[in-house]
Length: 122
Image 1 (tube, rainbow, N blue to C red):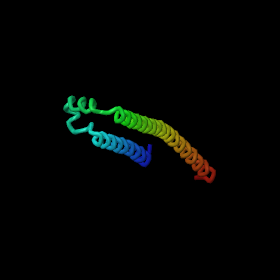
Image 2 (tube, rainbow, N blue to C red):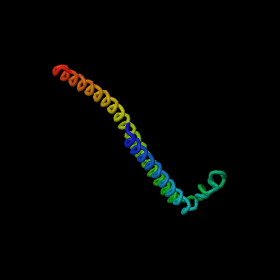
Image 3 (cartoon, rainbow, N blue to C red):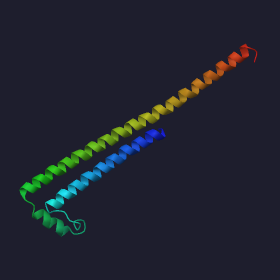
Image 4 (cartoon, helix red, strand yellow):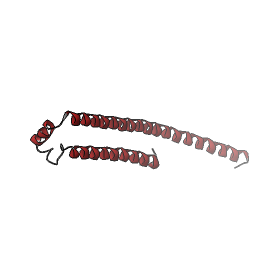
């Protein structure tokens, strides 16, 4: 893998991570707007369960839809990352093969040069 290919792969991975962070922030903002997110959720389970008990059926449906969309987006990003990894591996394998071909061509060229030199008395 060349440095350029590695940089492209790194950029794609960073894009996936950034998109996931953006999706999480959107999810968090939505939860804050409907009143079921606060900074104490991770440390206070009663705060979360109390917020969940107060959710209406309509709000729960909206949340289920949003969570489903987030799951779909994450799966799509995961598939893109897996496909990228497969192509990266294939590129690395093909690059190794190209190096071998280049070495063989170089040997052939050197042998032809030696043959020409011998033909002209060199």
